[in-house]
Length: 286
Ligand code: NDP
Image (cartoon, rainbow, N blue to C red; front, side):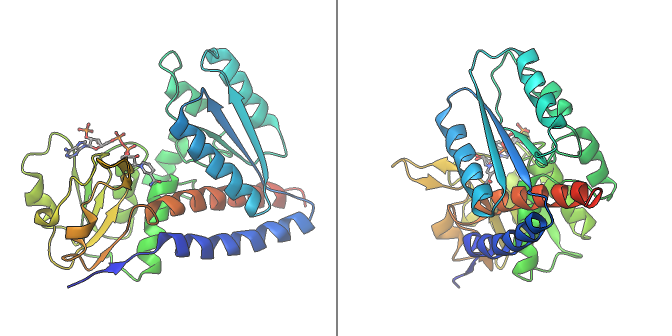
């Protein structure tokens, strides 16, 4: 059996077209959505992510502000920058690219972002609201995965969803979103014994661990839907996921590729959150 390849690139592009139309409508009413991205240091991977976010926000017609700070920036200077953006009425979304250098307290920085502009959905107020099912900004990668599952007609209610990885930005919120859609959720992590005993039970398997091709066909139940969040380099330096795509695709019902699966959805959800923030703020004065 060969599986359905979930085309995150195409689904993301379709949603971005809709976002662009909504941005144009807002601009006609005198309100241009604005996204600010703060980058500390010169890390190559972070630079690539940031430039992708900048390009994507401009492509849908948003204002894009990139603030690059040196790796030696003090915590106070970084917090002052966030505060300035919190106060800027032309900015509706603020994102501080992680990871930050070790001398900076990441939690303090996340908490300094106004929850109303926290388009990454990392602020504790938004995380708490998401868990109790109130409207909030939801972390972009898990909400992008929910969109992929929805757009491909994946049944969630009553299904067993197994999440491998429990990070605050992917694994934990992912499980909560699936729980809200009535899945039975199991979390696995680096201390889980006999991982395959759990993954083989999964109707929906989400993998976010950061180990190239770690999940093989032996970990999969025949007919499962497999979502690969990982972004790694293989032995030839080629981009690959946490799932061994070539073998798993023969057993799964549906699977996301890397690249072209989850990645494009993460950026798309960032744009959607920024649009949502602008729609809310601007409706207060238009
Ligand atoms: P983290 O490093 O923060 O978390 C990794 C998680 O995986 C931890 O919970 C860890 O367990 C668990 N883990 C590690 N090794 C194993 C193992 N052998 N078996 C089971 N669990 C394991 O990573 P992130 O969540 O930030 O990212 C995960 C991957 O997803 C990375 O490759 C990252 O690049 C990618 N990513 C992709 C995005 C996209 O848009 N496509 C967005 C965000 C991330 P423990 O808690 O016990 O340490």
